[in-house]
Amino acid sequence: MKIKHLSYILLYEVRNLLKMACSSILTPPAAVRGMKVLEKAAFAKKICVPCFTIKTSTMDLARKALKPYLLKLEKFQPVLDYPGDPTQKKVLLNPETVNSLEDLKENDRNKIKELGHKLESTEIEVGFDNWRSDQILRAVLPEGEEGSKGYTIIGHILHLNLREHLIPFKGLIAKVLLEKTKNIRTVVNKVDNIENTYRNFQMEVLAGDNDLVTSVKENNCQFHLDFGLVYWNSRLSTEHSRITDKIKTTDVIYDIFAGIGPFAIPAALKGARVMANDLNPESFKWLEHNVKVNKAERRGGSVRCFNKDGREFILSDVKDDLEQVLKSDAPVSKVHIVMNLPAIASTFLDALRGLVNNSCAESNIPVIVHVYCFARDFEPEKLALELIEKDAGFKLGGNLIELKIVRKVAPSKHMVCVSFSYPLSKLCGEGEEEPVKKKPCLE
Ligand SMILES: C[S@@+](CC[C@H](N)C(=O)[O-])C[C@H]1O[C@@H](n2cnc3c(N)ncnc32)[C@H](O)[C@@H]1O
Image 1: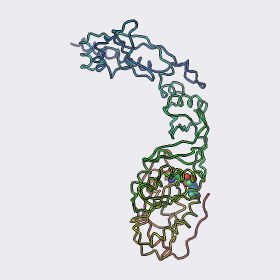
Image 2: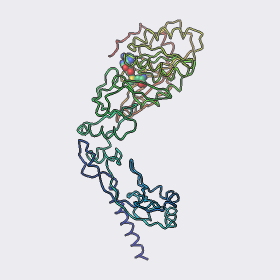
Image 3: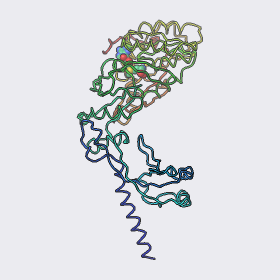
Image 4: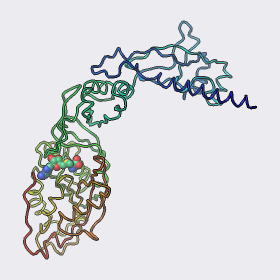
């Protein structure tokens, strides 16, 4: 009994050792480590893989049982014609999961046994085309650093944000990703972290076409843009729809930092009346273009586009329109003011204080502000609220609607959206001791 038990343990250990040895089979050759200029030939490798020889007539039955164990590689067929014998096929299995028949689940194993097949092994040659990009980069880049090269995709552009120590490998990384990522024509790397006024990235084209004009789909809209000249972040798509989901046909939206229109256009498509502004002439150009492309007015909504500083836009166009809205009998359910420029949006809040004429004081149309900011530390909601209250110049109290952590932008930095109902008394400047000072724009 004891001997039997011991032999089981030994068998178990041997199989584990075999598995550990096999776990490096499906990786490119060790010699590629540190490669800086892509040499595809160096990725070729002969590997020994388990296989079954299957009669063509029983292929369908066998394929069903063997499907979970097939050898899966890029551009690779695990079922091969048998050399010189059309009545048979060779089925190649994954050496990292199959070492013996025992590695097949009982049902599958029985089916294969019934068909009378024996596990064999065969040698095959795999190369650059067969490895996935993550396998290639893991094999090439310094050990433990392969994971530190996340990217985002914007239309046909793959956008890297390489850390300093991976810069020597940038050409190789770009070439591998260009070749291995579907529908990518251009690979760029963010050049520095300095935020410019228009929030567009400084980029270096590392591989592919030098063409940064692209198009992305978000929330059922198509957005065209020049990624070198305007702001776009695909990671905000959920946030864009979170806000636009709140918009009703009878709402009015003032989008102060509109970019190329990811809030404005879906809102108009819901039938709302939108005034959208951006300081960047290129964003303004693409915003107008996207309004046309998406036929943003087809469901009765509208988008008027402006190219001004946000403060000037608030103090002139928003003021005039808001006064009309608050005084008129037109059926407006809500006014939304969207301010997505997290680094400085809150410093524009003071422009709303006393913005409209006292004759609007009787209105009961809610004016909702959605203002974005960055908050550090472990209590981002608390810090965000403090910042917004400081810059708005009053406590939000019961006017606070929602504090939403949108995303983590750095290990201890969060993007937060604070939504609150702007008190009409403050909007009309009631009880103000002195006229509200209008700070100059920060930029
Ligand atoms: C963070 S982006 C947001 C764009 C868009 N709302 C989005 O979600 O994609 C901020 C935008 O504000 C614009 N901007 C920067 N300073 C501005 C200002 N003083 N007045 C108006 N727009 C400004 C930038 O050009 C940029 O398009």
